[in-house]
Image (cartoon, rainbow over all chains, first blue to last red; front, side):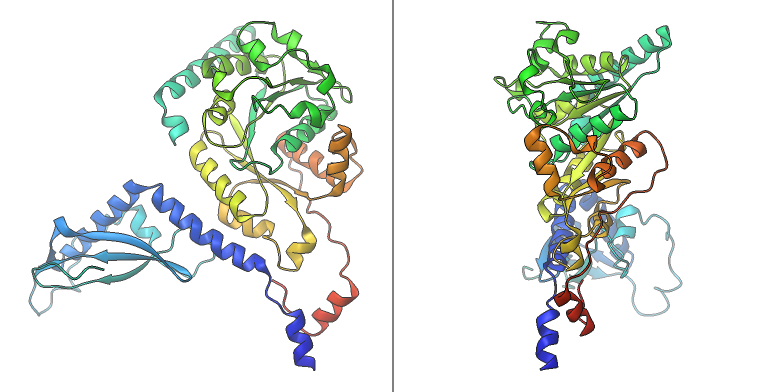
Length: 135
Length: 295
């Protein structure tokens, strides 16, 4: 009985739904309205990944997709070859840590409250030398 | 961005204000402030807010002129109760048919408040942007405030309304569509207008029940300086029916809220009053007794 009454009074308000929809719609709007930001993000992304592997810059494909409750960034980056074999490489090597520009900073997820744009990097398909299957 | 990146507009804009400023410095006049009220979305209360803020500012002793820039859909005269006094309109002035003084309608409730009505039988695109800028510049020399009631939308009508202004107030209701449109408009305005936010039509009761976006929800997303919050009060409908802005009644909660906004516009460090919430009903209290969460 108590449980029933609780449920009756505990309905989640529709404002939460409104807020969630608003957040997603604005992220999508902002991306749509800032193609130059996406370009520079793509550039930075390639720059970063290229430090480790050689990628096919011509065939990079970055898209955004709404999934359930988040906006996902889908990056399809064909890998041509792996530069550095095993060994020490990666950790000690961070020759240019600086130039992660604004978009990179923004893409950090952080659970902080109303971050304007939150992106989840989903996958960079690692395919040797050739086209990956379509995303 | 597009508004300001339009090279013609930017040029005309800087030319207009530079001209105004040089003239002002010649005569050592302190220029009034030109503020555009805009929202993107229609029906959020731009006109009502313009009328009430104009009234509140005038009651405070400022000289105020309201320009209805919604050419083709003249409304501000109705809200102010001045519809029978309008003889000439904005386009008459912009097209040099009449002198601006002939077109200004004195408010009947408040001294120092004047209206320049929109043309009803014309179209927004008939307004020449540079003429609009020149008009606003000249009015700034004579009035403390030039409030420009922008039409809905982000097309030429909006651009013309914005063109002569140097500040913006954006009006938003607690709805997804309104917030989205304000977000877009703020993007178009850029930094130059230092937009400030008025949240209109808030229903505190619904917010408390988790059925409406709250002030924090809205501004958590827009992140603008909050100028004020106006409740969705039946009084506003009644006063609009009568053509007597609610700001004339500073003793009412909503009237006082308009005055608080006016005070903040005038630079006072007045707090932003939140619309009062009436006491929770019996049922609701029973619900919270059971530990009901209302977000």
